[in-house]
Length: 48
Image (cartoon, rainbow, N blue to C red; front, top):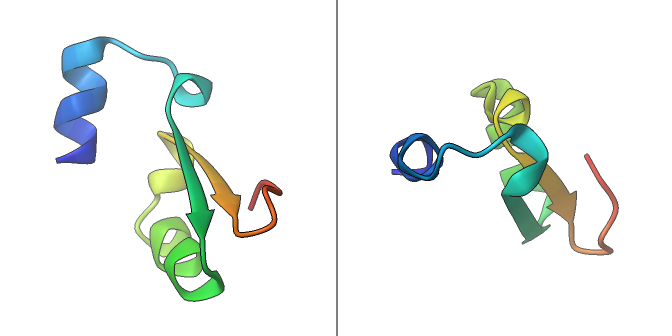
């Protein structure tokens, strides 16, 4: 769904941020390669 949204919007990586991700979710998103498509931010607002 996230990739479809990104494609529909025609956004660049930094345009869509996934915020307040806990450590487990951040790690899962990175394993799936989503960090190449979205800016992933942890619970403290730092980039993963």
